[in-house]
Image 1 (cartoon, rainbow, N blue to C red):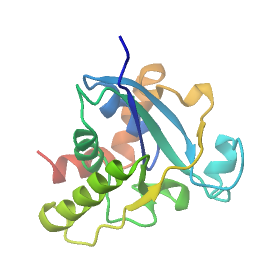
Image 2: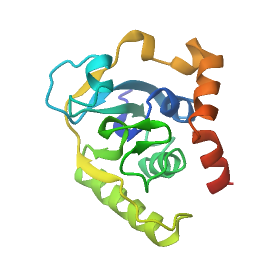
Image 3: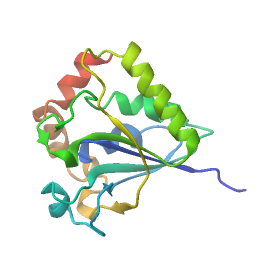
Image 4: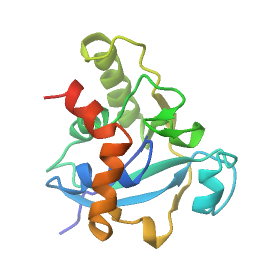
Length: 175
């Protein structure tokens, strides 16, 4: 039996905080933390964290679209970020922490653009949505210590979500 798996790539600030919400959904095969969108080949965490690599911290999601659709991934993505912040996410500041949707096909682009329009017109935000929709670029897997961080370091993960302001922001904007 041939699988029908697809790939989605999202930048939502600190990748540690972006894995768990997707990883726990049915039909998600794998969520990988990494870097994309910049010019440096095989960047390190320190190079990306410095803000000089041009890369975003991002997650790449391998999923079964028959179980969890790309539209559902987009819906979940919007609920994890502040799409009105062009300077980073929460207490992580810099271009490497901006939000973006990286599309892998014209169908993904169309769905992403429609979801952004819906967020602009019907979402809970008053400020303009600044999340970019960009063509997928080479995705570099982050170092092993950054993979599934929420499982390896559950206390630090929970503290990061609260201290950064992400948890409170999500709870105040979404039911």
